[in-house]
Image (cartoon, rainbow, N blue to C red; front, top):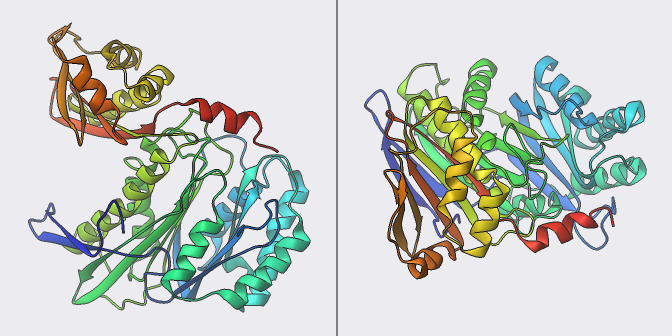
Length: 428
């Protein structure tokens, strides 16, 4: 279930004029045919909680991935980039929470190799078909003996059930307050095709990939080249449009695995079927991205910034991200203070040229919508009504630039006292 939606149908028209339908269903990485998962306690850093997860496909998968833009890349990122780019296929992912295996030198990279070898033995897959992911404290070495013991547990516990997928989603959490997973179904060539995903991310999250781990599985028949194209195009408007605190992590990873077990006719570029697949992938990625933004460390509200009427798509992205990244805007949302000046300020230093005398600015939530700025001046709005709107758990800032036809959305959260508390003693 996502925001109260379960087994719901979403309909839209693709660029080829064909009506596209997708069905939102319960589940995550085990929703697609042939995928199994598990989450177990391995004692990596945490006590009395699941902290290792596995995703396994019964058949080899084509792979696609995107990774952190940080120059300092964690050992698992370097390992996974090599597997995605050079291995003929992937079949398993081993994930640990608590220790990031970042800034750990050659020893840290060797632990990726040892993890892959242990998983290859336990799961009976090639070593170069194993991907690894870590999240947590930077600079600590992994307890490799516990990792290897955890892999044995994961191999025995893995299953294709909804519960197994949920346990995996819970096991990859660090400061997250809730697990994050979503799944959808579409039809391609008369065959049911399913995509499912899970992610984690709560802090050290900023556009251009965040401290986020995200894993998407699908049983679609699609080539590696086309899957890579779809992933790289979509990440620009989903995971790259969220920010919690302005810090881009060392470990950001998005991995997508397609095992072809739906047995649909192979998806081809520039076809209605490709558009349907892209729409489903976008729904998965955007849903996970918004879940992470709304679960930012200490957050009490999901902040969405929608910019319309921009002259170019890129300028719409820049403007929306500038607002969602502003600490003053984030603090304003926490205080339920309708201070339009902070939003205008963030738009103004974005680097995009525009006429502030022409834009309209609204606040919106389930409590209603209110216009707070128009044609260069603040409107005579009700502060009480505006505060009520800003007090809801999901708040949207709407900005009409009146420059063109392009639009974009970015997502973040409010900035609270608890964010400082969480990060002041994160290592303990």
